[in-house]
Length: 65
Image (cartoon, rainbow, N blue to C red):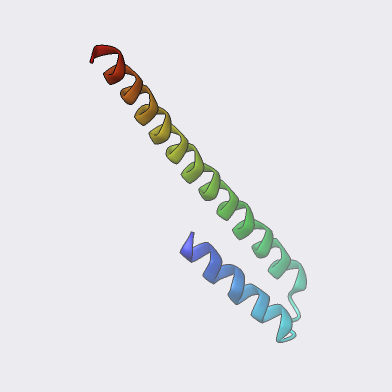
């Protein structure tokens, strides 16, 4: 995610600096934003799965006590 944010910032800087390849820069901006969203969603899914396992483990322990 860090790399995505760095790449997005670099592309935005290129656009603001007047780089004439607007189409290519916009394509890169879209690509890095999509990659960032994929990584964020994957992180959220992993965190949710860990939370569910913790809840289920706690529930199972409570039943056996």
